[in-house]
Image (cartoon, rainbow, N blue to C red; front, side, top):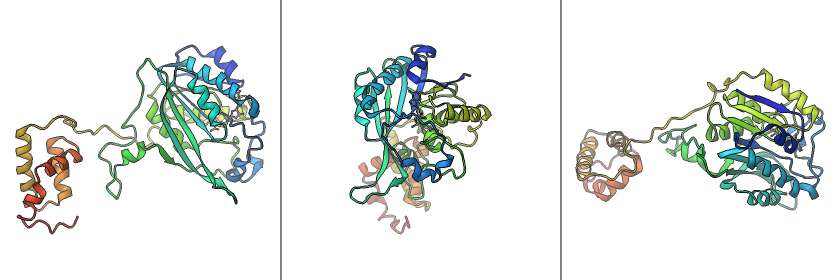
Length: 335
Ligand SMILES: C[S@@+](CC[C@H](N)C(=O)[O-])C[C@H]1O[C@@H](n2cnc3c(N)ncnc32)[C@H](O)[C@@H]1O
């Protein structure tokens, strides 16, 4: 495993240390070029706990700066590797322009809604960031669809947890860390865990061009990935470097929720006539035996190795529930 961190400018550093096509995932949160950004005061409460020396980029240099580091990111990513950029909206255009000047392909533009938005009187409260998901063409992309939930896991309202987790609007609160020394803008652990679980494999190399509080590196190491990165602020670098050292490789693995691929074996396959007749018969049997509609569909999904929707669609095509339930006087179901 590889753990390499450098207290230097990421553009220079990447040129010195990172080979072409060598990184599986870049997950980074560049400075936003907002002069006098005070947002951190709202969630850190006490400025004394925020480390000095955070390096901001002057607004007029932001477009060129974004182009320079994103060009390096494109070079070092392996084909198929992913680049995740967390950005505010003020200078998002510069980041999007820089990305459009590369070969990188857009896969998602996620909205992350956080707490501690700044109160306003004459406009709406700003309470979201953008998470851009781009990949380098020409290789196999890692997207671990079932990293966190299986396709059959449901919440109390019977909605798919997997579907909800894959939606592109995320509500994740920032962490309030009273009395802890920290960098100015730290990403929440839950957000980093989610991105690393979906977009990388164990032992992959995860890189952060702007380490700040080393949050990405800490989670990457905790999830058994290699980590490399840069932070130009010596205060932050020296303080947080020590913290990463304390983390054991893969120590988070047993603490995070993981899913498994429980897709039914015949999902997507056409139905045979024999299966359709059998489905008709089994529905009647199961309903006669007192199973609710919901339970019957669950059982049929297991027996026929198809998803619930496939079973429901097929039953509807047979008009079976209207044909059978009233005749069997089964409409007393409580569901
Ligand atoms: C938004 S913060 C990153 C926060 C980090 N994701 C975390 O969770 O703690 C951006 C960081 O980039 C650093 N930085 C600014 N310019 C840099 C450069 N050219 N190379 C490396 N780091 C830089 C800043 O000092 C700051 O710590």
